Structure formats: structure tokens, C-alpha cells
Amino acid sequence: MSRQLSPQEASKVEMILRVAMFGEFLGHGVFAWQLKPRFLEMLAAMTGIGGQTAKTLMQAIGASDILIALIVLFKPVRILLAWGALWGLATAIARPIAGDPIWDFVERWTNVGVPLALLYMRGLPKTAKEWLS
Image (tube, one colour):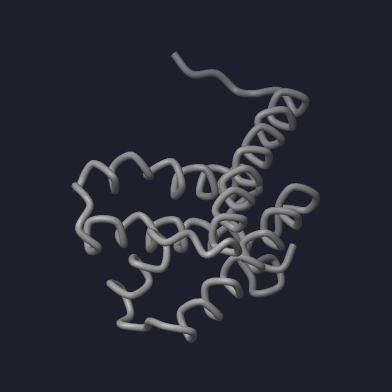
């Protein structure tokens, strides 16, 4: 049975989701910044990019993931939440494309679900301006 959350309860659930997304993006960002070999393999499998270009791109991805983690923790901007869901889906799909079992994709559905749930709780945007708030 579902029930309506009070504003205080909704605020607590939103904070839980913000912390969860922060952890996801911070962890992945640090691994990308450190040039985790498996991340470089997945990047090559998805894009064909390798070598120094892949390393440079991976560190840029890592830096952006860390920045998104911090922004979402303090101010969950809707466009970043949508990006987080799409990026979570892309990185989950990269697993089986790079040769991992399909279960590595399934295991990462929360990487899509957490930002989507947070976007839903913040309210789906109706105008272009709302995407930035």
C-alpha cells in the first residue's frame, strides 16, 4: 500500500537519493580520473578511441563526473539528473558491449533509477527554464 509522503519525508527521501547519486558519480569519477583499465577498455569498445586520446578523454570524464556529484549533492539541477540517468544507461550498456555478462548491465540499473527517481521527486520540467533549476 502506498501513501502520500509529508513534505519532511519527501525532503529526507530526496536527500537519500542525492547522497546515492553523489556516491555513484564520485566513485566512478575517481576511477575514471585514475584511468581504471577496465574503463579504458569499455571506452575503446564503445567508441574505438584508444591510446593517449582515450586517457585524456577518460580523465575529462572523471573530472566531469566528480563535478556533477558535487553539484547534485548541493543543488540537484534537473538537466544534470537527466544527464545522470542517460550517462548511467550508457555506461551500463558499455559493460556487455565490452564483453562482460549481461548481468553487469542489469546490476547497474540503479545507476539509471536513482537520478530518474530524483528527477521525478524534483518535478519533471515543463519549460526550458525548469531544466536549469
